[in-house]
Amino acid sequence: MRDVIEALFFRELKTRFGKNRRLGYFWVIGEPMTHILFFLVIFTLIRARSIPQVPIEMFLVTGFVPFFMFRNIVTQIMAGVQANRALIAYKPVKPIHIFIARALLEMGIYFSVFILFMVVFGWFLDLPILPIHFLEVFVAFLGLAFLGFSLGVCLAFLNSELEYAQIFINYGINILYFGSAVLYPLWIIPDHIVEFLLYNPVLQFLELLRENYFDGYPKIEGINFTYPFSFGIILLFIGLWFYYFRYKYLGQIR
Image 1: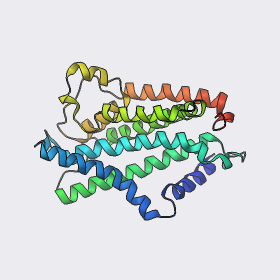
Image 2 (image 1 turned 120 degrees about the vertical axis):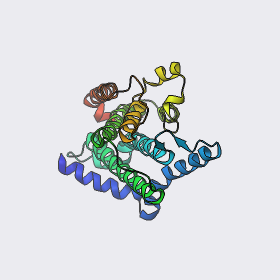
Image 3 (image 1 turned 30 degrees about the horizontal axis):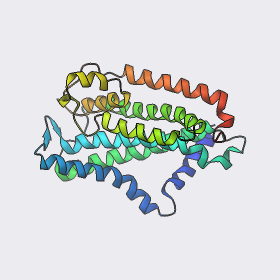
């Protein structure tokens, strides 16, 4: 299994960036950078240059990059079987191998991008880049990747079963983008709305990452590792249940 996943990982790495690797590298870095620069300009124009104890540049990086990792893990897993149907004809290759390889690739790419952005902003803007609790930050990052993997496995089967599921899934991811406190601090939201938003496990992981990264970051009651990890485990069991009974038909139902 390990050899199969490793081979698929390097195959996906080559496919991910295509023949024009420079363009591929630029897109991976350029997409989150575009969002960060756009909202940095917006916040500057409205004179919201700084969040208490948190440089706005670092705040945006800790929101956009982890969320894009989560989003890409979900979408890459959903598209994985369709893109590798010829490989699945070989007995050693199973859909779960493709899921794992794609998730590991996206996690590796965006973790590298995260470190790159932090180093660049720290170097040029003279900002502190080291987290106050490194282990908790890393666990939050891994948790977001795990949640993306679990959700991606579930949605891969939903997308295969329902013809127009992809459209609604894309809408759902866009809603998550705005409902996960990616580009705004959670404490500016009214309490009755925050209570509703806390059911979002993506938001919980992002807030956990930030409150363990920045010294003095305001902590919101109700945010902990237990809920989002439990949510991810439940999703994983649902996805694996579908996988056990339906994996032979994955990518062929439509």
